[in-house]
Length: 629
Image 1 (cartoon, rainbow, N blue to C red):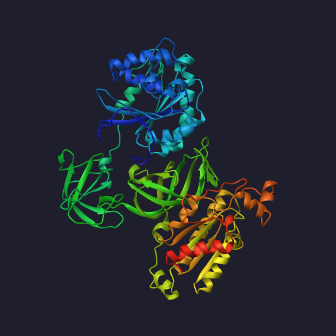
Image 2: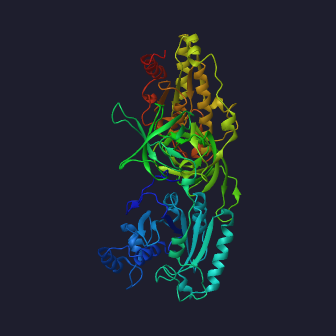
């Protein structure tokens, strides 16, 4: 996914510029398979450890090490104190080293299941994965999970490192059985190359040179395989560059900065702004070191264009003779990284290349079984699960399938409230509906409809606990607005469930879909020029925010009917709280399902301290201030 995945990582060396001789690889697998030890051994054997670090390593080995009097090479990579004390890798540790044949950047990724997001981070920029397996244990679930993720993240080359072969007396049969099992397990992944190597990271067998203790093995050592690997060339693909910055140091200069994802670019080449389709010509290529006559993948550049076009951060410049795809709906593979399950219909933020956009998962097609790789029906994706989904963005974006481009096909999912990365995805293809469906231009617009009614349209979204007084206040408010000659409509939670949403229950997924549908209906009614009063518990802030986004600025007011749950329980007009307490109602908000209190509502009505008339008057005063009535 290139630079798309954002997560914390321990960067210990600055990354060199893109080069044909540079190989990025990760080590992955289950806990205690020896990933950190292997990297430490590689660094040691290639002379990549300064003398002062070697002295520190020897001292730390006695304090933190697990190898007795021997040097514990894993400590070169396990830099966090918690990692050293627990002898596990938590973070992603990057190391840079060189040999006479090649330069390398290696990412040591965690083996624990709860740190799957870190493994995905390391895999997002890697060309090769070293999948370690403990020779005593064979394939484990995490081995399969990491191999699947490596495949999904576009890693084409794999080395199966059957480690700790010394602990099974360098047994050839065990090695061959594990190799056969692994090749059968990943057959469907279509890795471009897969080489199995028996090794002992602790003692260095088959790490740098072939080991004399395994005369039956005639393949390459690990380093020989890494040095000899041939990679595909991104330079042979069409030019693509996501715009990261519009540079305007003064009124006489405008440039478009970014890192080339693929292809070459030269002054005089014609490029297209992907979404708008506008074309222009490159007049100059500028870098920190001066102008270039030609730029290649990985180069950070600023392009100066012949025409003054509407281009902003997130746009993609592409070769005019090989335009990039544009769509707003896709099928994608998804790895879910949050303890809160992925819900279809819920609105999230998606970051694709340099663009952040609102969107939602419209359907979970299936999830993948980690052991059989079969497809299983799913209504949600839980932590660390992998699935195939349909997704919809709020507007069209430039894209390529992930198989073609990590930069334009990979994305992350961001929680709207916490801003945390909660998922990563890989676009498979655009859905046909994304290109077959177009907005129909209409002669009569929302402004004309509102003018005919002599009012401003808006949505008043009443939210609060059951028994807070939402329906009572909403009903009284509509009566008063109607008496003033305004055109209104109330959408009440119970009433809508008798018709439009009668097929929905009260699971979290159904609640999300309930509010999504009502938000769409409310937006259509506002488009017709109405004052729409929505009275729903709507317990999740993300869903209320998604409803707000469907309206122009200023036309959505979140009205929080702030009644303490103790008062709601006392009122209990429908007897629901007593039933929920008795276990007769599941997923009841405030009892056994959460309610997310609005952080900054447009109107807060403390209904327990006022009469219904007084509460309505408070809302009316706010509407008058906003010239809505």
